[in-house]
Image (cartoon, rainbow, N blue to C red; front, top):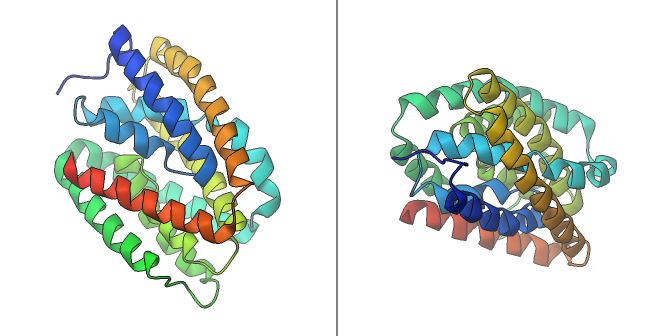
Length: 245
């Protein structure tokens, strides 16, 4: 498969359009933006060349989302999630190079579809999960993120918690911020992204950030029950797309 070449105007145009839509999704749900771009591009370009550029764009969403989310987070929860996820991240990134990416994408899409269907039935934890369970789930989410840059697993877990939608969203925003920086840093060390490519991604990232602000404003105008259903149906659609492409 060809690499995603940011010196190609057509590739930049496609990436920019996908980023505008993805930014709104990211701002509204707290996640899902990278998945939108990845599902648009991976049928045509080598996954590794897509993931690192999407990470470089997504990092700009943090400027729009993190400040307003800080007040809603539970520090013990996000600490357990992020530290364990950072530990799992290198294993997933190793899998990008060693495991058939099509097979990996199919397996994750099947798991995401199954979990989302269960959650659409209304099932949720009766009590807030333990810190240990958050750490275990965080490690698994780090592996999955490292291999795919998709945060389905962690979002499904957090949406099943009895805490409010605002708290769940704040947790995934903070988690995504830390993981995005860690992911991009590891790939930068390997030379997977050049300074020129990062510059192009930064320009696209500004538009992505502004789109995320619009999505965040839309979130504040919606009821919690409607928010959960919209997120779950979006997750199901993205998981289905992952099986199809």
